[in-house]
Amino acid sequence: MRYRHRKIIWALMFVLLCGSISGCSKEQLELLLQEDGYLQQAKPEQVADAPSQRKAKEPKAERKEVKPARKISVGKYAYEQLDGEGKAVYDEMLSTILSHEEKISLSTIDTKVMGRAYSALCSDYGGLFWVNGYIFTRYTKGGELVSLEFSPKYTMAKNERQQLQEQIDRVVEQWFAGISINDTDYQKAKYVYELLALNTEYVEDAEDSQNIISVFLGRKTVCQGYACAVQYLLEQLGVQSVIVSGKALGEPHAWNLICLDGEYYYMDATWGNNGYRNKEGVETSFIDYNYMAMTTSEMQMGHEADMEFDLPECTAVMNNYYIKEGNYIEEWQPDQIGGMLAQAWEEKRVLTLRFSDGSLKKQAFQYFVQDGHVADYCPGISQVNYLEDSLWKEISFCFNQ
Image (cartoon, rainbow, N blue to C red; front, side, top):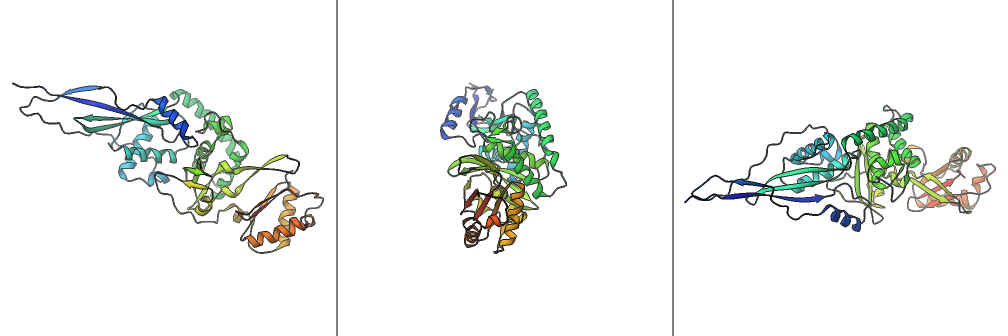
């Protein structure tokens, strides 16, 4: 007697929220997983009959042929950290997202490869505001994994995406009125840093806070929005940038790795907008340049990265704001410092001086603040609003009141 053996193809579906939980608490993550319904096993979707055989044999798994996607991300930092298989999967995912397609069968059946590739993609592309994570489906045949399907989780239809992109493009065009593609990398980075500090407010419950919509259209965002906007803007100015995630002061946080003149620095635009209160309690904001172009050691004073790929050791200082602007003090020259104070006083702005060592900073503080010699260079000054930072060895003279 001949028997017909049914080989059932099962589909196991899992939800992975990647690139969308920076700044979220553990409770928020659990809620998202609950809402999306973490499925342990779906119902059988297909049934395949094996050929009649005298002895039943398990069919061998066959990999689906996947057409290679265009390689448009060559040179991007996170992309280049992947191996050949990871790069191929990254290309396939990105092609699907940019085309707004529903799903694609990947060229890998390794979910770890898929996860690393998607993490890298989200780090390289801050402008993908229409997608929020993905769903993947594993297909098995006779207990053997045969296919892995990737489905982006779109937050809007393609026509709405296009309309929002046009609005974002108009805002970016206006913001770029004061910068040129021919300016130096330092000028571009400083311009973007200042743009975000002056035009965007940090608001914890801001709408669309995990993408660039919140920055360009809402002007209110959180760290993920800032980091995405930095990557998006610098890329258009020809400066390589990648989104970095981890923790800052123990809380989930996102910032950037940027490349200026071939050397890497860290930038945290979220912390660029700072403020202080004078003795009357009046709060005034100012741009804090400490976080514009940090070395690894400076970044690690408040940040702890947690990435799927390696990050470089950043040691360059030539594009550090204080060195570039001449505000880095290495020797005691009171008249030189006094001249800088006089100019800042005349322009009614904040002047932050960074000192090469603590003793030099202490000497300057004693002379200009405690002994009152700031008045020798700032005629008509009646009080001095200042900030003293021992960690960074800085004194900020706040003349913008």
